[in-house]
Structures are given as C-alpha cells and as structure tokens.
Image (cartoon, rainbow, N blue to C red; front, top):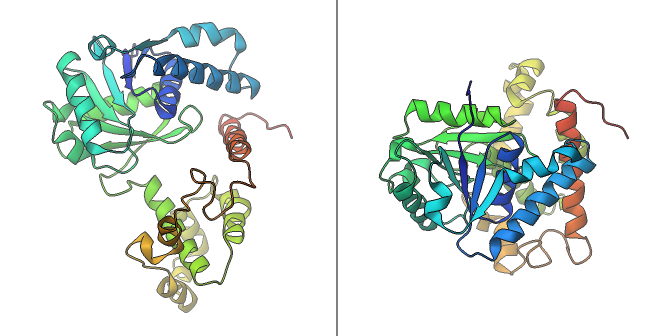
Length: 319
C-alpha cells in the first residue's frame, strides 16, 4: 500500500483528461492538468467541477468536500511546471501514437528520472509507445474508460520493457484512488475494447444479413445479457452451464455460424462509415441522432453507471 500518493500530472485538458484529473483528486492526489493552449484550461476545470457536482447530485460525493477536492487540481500550460516533481504522468491526448509519444518524450525531459509515465489509450500498443521513450521501463498504460470519474475499472497494460515495479506502482495508485485495476496483455484492444469489438462484429453482421434490427440487439444486451453480467462472467457461466453443454452439437453449430469478418468494411459498421454516417458526430449511424437526443442518452448512461457503482459499494439504489 502507498503511504502517500504521488503528485500526478495529466497531459490533455479534454473530456478524458479532466475526468481522470477529477478521479485522481477524488482519491486524494494532487493533480496538475496540462494543456497546450491556455484557453482550454478553464474549460477543463469547469468540466471537473461539473463532474463533482454530478457525483454530489447522485449521492456519491459530499458537497462540503467540493472546494477541497477541486483545489487539488491545478491547471498549467507549461509542460515543465506541470510535470516537475510528479511521480505519475499520464497523457490523455487523441488516439495518435506520434502525438502521444511526443508528449511523453517532452514530459520525460522535465519529470523526475523515477517518474512513472502512462497513457490512457484504449488500443495502441504499450510496447510501441514506450519504444520512443528514453525511459521505456518506466512506462505502463492505464486505460481509463469513459466517463473516467465514474467507471471503476481501469486496464493496466505493461509493455515489453516495463519493469514489474512500475506495473505494481500503477496498480497500487489506481487502487488507492478508488479504481479496480485489471492487468491486461498488450494485444490489440487489450480486453475491454476487444470484447466490445467481438460483440459489435457479430451483431453488425446479423444486422447486415437482415435477420435482426439494431434495436433488438441493443435490447438483448441491456435488458438481458447485461443484467446478469455483474454476477457472472463468461467462464463462470461456462462452468455453471457445464463444459459438456458448451461442446454439444448445438453449441458447435453456434460457434460455426459466428461472424469471422476480418475488417469492419465487411459489415454495416464499415458501410455506414463509407456513407458518412459515423454516429452521433454526424447525426446518424445505426440510429438517427437528430431524433434521439445525444445529451439525454449520455445522461441516462451516466445515471446507470452510478447505479452500478452504488451497488458495488454496498449501497441501496432507490427507485
């Protein structure tokens, strides 16, 4: 267990960066949030404040702690100042490996030699990112999922050169700041994104074959499959049902019929993209987001995540 939390620096004042800063501050860490442009920093601080207010409204934070928690977050547009004395530096930039490597290289020039560097990438290789760093052994991915201040799980992904002590440091820091760290392999998609893609590939294939609608697939997931996932994972279910059943002719028929498309272009995911229908950003994807309100959808998503957090913490959810 850590006796004292290290000073943390978050590189990137966007949604993910400000949410990670809030998460670390809620856990008791002093956090510097760096942005290349001065004008982006007040927006990041406002976003962190709004995130805290949401937690208060949901009963997950005390309004009396607001000033103290937010005071732990300090904005800085100077890279050297932001990482000076920091024990943990995590970048939260766009999913572009060149940009991420550049930020981490610049941070290494000013951070202490023993500082642990990290990235919240959801798919880029830890080994490839660290290959451009002067201290690659001090790097490990910490993949926070959106919204980072609500979702408890964080994937910890060491690269080929990462020291075991660094992996342990990141794991302990996450645990101390209220997260559930899970060690994941440095493979495409790690574990979280990998299973998301597997489910999307299968359902998108079925939609493309015209045998089911997106609404039916999402309902199966949200109302059916997801309802028991908190209590039972895939391997637990396999053992419960029996591996004899999982090797039955019926199971073999299902496995043989599953989609094995090698690229999104072979499913409606790629076809919609080619048509310029990329989802909420364009107003239309599988759904028409000109009719459905994206902000209301995100708000309901966050409220549902909060319900699960309360259950995990042993609290009662009042309907």
